[in-house]
Length: 218
Image (cartoon, rainbow, N blue to C red; front, side, top):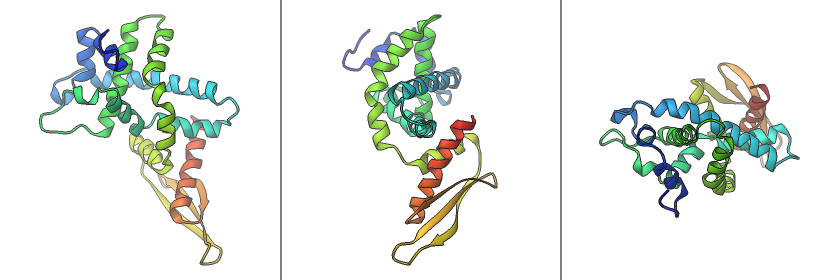
């Protein structure tokens, strides 16, 4: 493998040409395997993230783990990794167009899948070593800089194709120190509530509560 300064590129260069092209050539430029690889890679990352959350935070309740999981598996986080790993600049895309954040997130997933396929059967340890090497160095940075629950909810529900909105249902307290209650409505149904001293703070609380609950029910 080449490029010891960038282990992700070293792993990429270790792939056979067909797999490497599957990762780097987007359908807009004639690629055929990009989104199939991304579909597979999504499940691998999900297992890796959840396993490490349980191991790193054994005393946390499931709700707290769910919030961290939503951050680490978000479109924003995966797109960030594609940039940091040097994959984004290598992506062959429609001429004159710029790949979206969602496309870069899929690029990360496709890359993970390609490495897993290359590793072959009984490859769990190699996949873990691979992700420990290229994902784990960014773990804490992602958690500390991307914990915007409203953005995470928007990302999640956009991928599911679900309409949603936030509604102020109550305002209490004096004018100089109000307390707002906001509910998050998904598909016409209230799914969570939050309180805060501003509408935005209450919306963030409602979004955070929703992220806790969805992992408990999935």
